[in-house]
Amino acid sequence: MGARNANAATSPVANSNGNAMAKTEFDANRAFEHVRKQVAFGPRPAGSPALAETRRYLVAELTSYGLKVTEEPFTATTPAGRIEMVNVIAELPGLSADAVVLGSHYDTKRMANFVGANDAGSSTGALLEIARVLAGQAKSKKPELSIQFVFFDGEEAVIEWSDEDSTYGSRHFVTSRQKAGKLGTIRSMVLLDMIGDRDLVIAREGHSTAALTDAIWKTAASLGYSKHFVNETFWIEDDHVPFLSAGVMAVDLIDFRFGTSRDRYGDGGPTNAYWHTPDDTLDKVSAESLKIVGETVMPRFRRSLRSSEGSRPAGPTRRGRASTSVAARAGVRSLGGRGRPLTAFAVLGGGGGGGGRAGAVPVGSRPTRTRSGGRPAGPASPHPNRGHPSRPIGAVQAVPVGRRPTPRRSRPRTHHWTGNARPRNWFVTTTV
Image 1 (cartoon, rainbow, N blue to C red):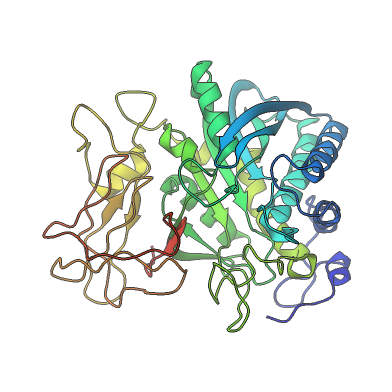
Image 2 (tube, one colour):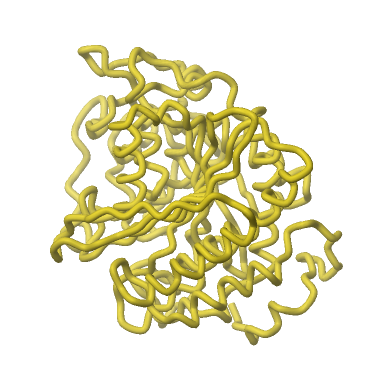
């Protein structure tokens, strides 16, 4: 993918066919300017002076929109020691105190010369612009539910991605509200991450609540953006997982195939070549992509996600409730023993010839792939688009939260991951 001059993105935005887009309230150039400002601060890892400067910029912008802004500091215990982190929360009051959350992380990977234009400059820039537009609309008509725009600190691993070394800000946000007895007021959550790729292709994230995913994909189709929101499924650990694990419906919108290069790439492999490398620069970000995502997300928040919510997730307790719509689709009941319900199912279609039964895998567990006949195929490759199963997915069992799925006939053969921690992402070739 050839890089274009960054200034090109500040010109009037055109769609993929080269035609001018119809004017909307989402200003793509303004969103792109927010990305440019973040990149100008330089690398922005958690606890750095550059991230503090970024935070001051976020607070000033959100305050100028008339939103109530709160800085939520906390101390994170990391493999590198204790680091002071700060979530930024801007609230748009609705007719109800119950709220929906629209989130993005604003820290960057702790890496020399990594400015994170796409990760996480793009989602942060788009979220600022969405907040401005929705705050303006609320002056004439309040949303049914309150909206919280949350900028998470500490999404990136300090050393290497693991359950303990990642998503510090979102985990703090969820646990602090659980302790205060306020998590029940959060109806649902939409996460934006890495949405600025010039070649924008967002696949369905398998952990995410299917009802929310379906609603967003339906909106994208109605806007003519189906080529950017594709019916392909993959799994990734991100800031939405703490919400799902606590029983809050959530969806992650992320384009995790960022740049292609056979010769120059990092941990993401040749089909995610710019991810977590110094090549994640401003010239790789498209104002058009920011606009596509912004226009797709905003209609859901104008209605405060009412049409995509339905009832709250089912289950015997507030924590670990199963998603009614997704669990029902999978046809799976709680298998956890001691009343532990299944949470945040990802329903897998058979795809291709030969069919394959739908299965479900909960948050925190890898999907176990089986070939026809149930013989285990082993885990997916740690790099996206590597090691796809050649046959349809099927016969994947449902597993309670916190346990790994085990094949019905035998354990999968050993697979050695790169590094000490499991990868946060794995693609599976299935469509829905």
